[in-house]
Length: 166
Image (tube, rainbow, N blue to C red):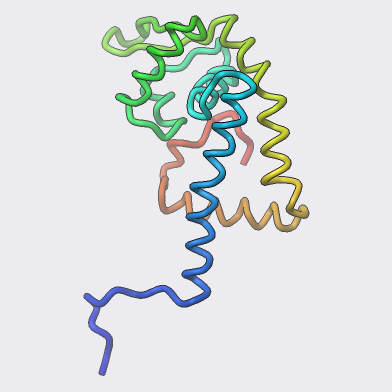
């Protein structure tokens, strides 16, 4: 008998363990990053991610649709966070001069200061939890595994910042 193509391809014990470990990582790591950033800088991880993406680009300015891609966010979610960050003076919205229907987010001096305040503690936690436990070969393997998975999740690499080296 041949397997019915409609039957699910169940995970092997090893695959299930790898998947459940990834689920544990995907749930534990964001909570730890959120707690550290909130404690040290009064920002959620997502807020920090938005501000840090703006800090990386020339002019500290991005169209909201591009910022949504880079942060893997819906425009609706991003708009709510941008409104909150704008209220705190960390960024401002302005019309896109190339397309009057679109808006851009611009990092303010206060936003730059917030990123600079938050970054050292954030990098320390990222190093402690993700980078330092791995030797260079393991880190390279982790990167390769991420690239393979992202090739399926984001084949056009829309979420990859242009300024990152490949």
